Image (cartoon, rainbow, N blue to C red; front, side, top):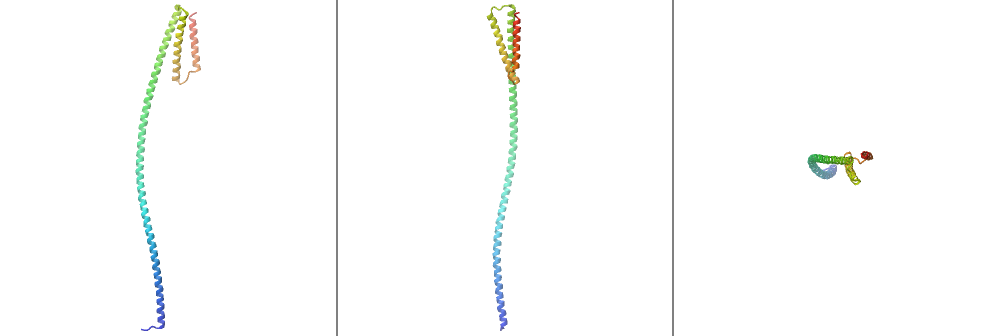
Length: 201
């Protein structure tokens, strides 16, 4: 079989076209391979990222569970603390009430003793004054010394009596001895002196 010149030229041209086509095909395959490698790398990175996200998600879930348990523990502890505080408050209140009642009772007993002592002193003063008046009326005072001694005894009992009254006023009414109290006692003393002098007349 013989080729004409024209056919030979066409064959050459076809071969060139085939070479170009093959070159393009190779180029496309190279590009496809590079892109495939890039896609594979990207896919590997994506898988790693997914694994990291999954691990983080798992860790976050664990942290949430731990946090939930901690919240429950804290809630229980707070509940126990409140219960303990209420118990402590109740015990403290009972202790305070008991101490208050004891202090009140002790204070009442103290003032009762003071009042009883005051009554006893008043009776003693009254008895001394009665004896003093009887001596004056019966004129059995042997000397001025005996009279002076008896007057001193009365003054001593009265001074002791006044001190108890002042203590009682300070403790009960929560105030110190006022000037009005002093004036009242002075008036009572002056009245007693007048009554005392009236016995001589």
